[in-house]
Image 1 (cartoon, rainbow, N blue to C red):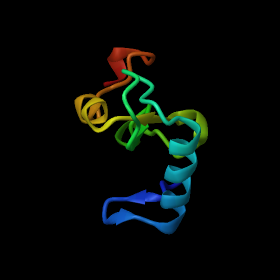
Image 2 (image 1 turned 90 degrees about the vertical axis):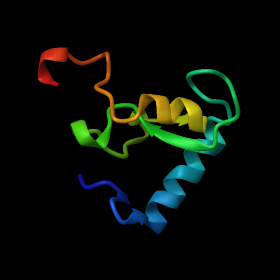
Image 3 (image 1 turned 135 degrees about the vertical axis):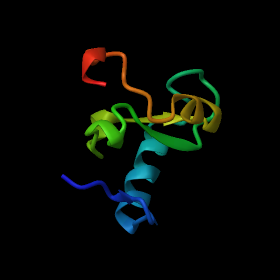
Length: 79
């Protein structure tokens, strides 16, 4: 499943997905600050997709700090 968020920027589909996530999670899942970005829990780089269960409302500092790091829930040997 290709991501609605492309390397060239966001699509109208991604903007709809983003708005839904931010409405459902107005506080950052990681620190509780206001959410202003949407984080892919399993980064797209590692096969994460745009399914709702893979998305989290996040503040910019937390999202930037996570970057495209390998998620801790997956075996580190894969990364």
